[in-house]
Image (tube, rainbow, N blue to C red; front, side, top):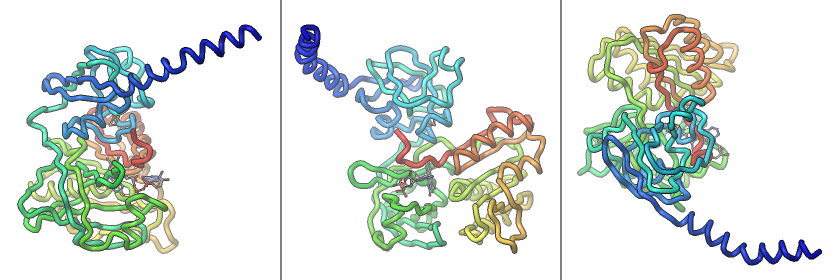
Length: 363
Ligand SMILES: Cc1cc2nc3c(=O)[nH]c(=O)nc-3n(C[C@H](O)[C@H](O)[C@H](O)COP(=O)(O)OP(=O)(O)OC[C@H]3O[C@@H](n4cnc5c(N)ncnc54)[C@H](O)[C@@H]3O)c2cc1C
Ligand code: FES
């Protein structure tokens, strides 16, 4: 009884101090310096380093924002961080060597990190832009959305990068840039409908009609074509075709001689959308082949059946000399990554991916 009273009293005495200490830590902000670019920005103790950098317009390399792709990997040179979500992309050896993922960690003191891939001032800095919906073509649960950009602004981006649609209450939703028309100042995004989706549902149900204004932050992410002559194997599921479409346009524009095989998968064959535009790009490259793959095809389906990575690996058992670009469903990407490397001899450094994780699952 007595000890309970003592404990209770101690708890009562200490609790406000403890709460105050926790609140103070959460309200504290620190400086993060990124080497070798020597750029410094401010982060709060309760947000990930990556999300602070994004909000302040620093284009640090990143893709999935959920600890799975490794694109935001950095070395912690000095300072302390707390881990807010599992750093799946890091091995035990990476962790022991001081590697961290900026999308999973928060600063708990001033921090210096090294990120060799970050080009600092030479990187394309993301901007916030007002846009207007100028076109919407709906194919079942998929939509091709055209947005008119301000006439006085031109867009610089690497095909493969994405835009965040900025919504109310600081919510944002990520969409890959599928096409940019420099002459008409328009941008194309591909949107999949999700039941009760904060952004997709109003779009599909007509609550965001033509001429509605949308604010975008772009360009973001580090999924981009590498410049070399290696043959390309591209894998896409669903709207994962969007950044691949931008990459195809780049290959056509530069008259690239790189051999290319694209495997695009949908659950049902009736769901393939925007096929005329994709086929036109593929048709403009004599050394390119496209394979449509349906995992649950109808009886009349004449294309491939199964999963894109299974079909691709069956047809390309030796990938020593290739580059692989995979985009869309994270399970497809994880499976393709393991199998391309373990079964087909693809070097780890030749696998590039953009996981379409739900924004609600991101930090
Ligand atoms: C870098 C990047 C690029 C992306 N590019 C595209 C793109 O080009 N086109 C596109 O359609 N999507 C893309 N996504 C995925 C998209 O940002 C999310 O799916 C987004 O959450 C959808 O917003 P919403 O408002 O429609 O649904 P939300 O309000 O976010 O979600 C509603 C419900 O649907 C579920 N849900 C949402 N998205 C998914 C998903 N992808 N898989 C499974 N369940 C889900 C949620 O868990 C929730 O239960 C991208 C994601 C990333 C990280
Ligand atoms: S692991 Fe951080 S962006 Fe993918």
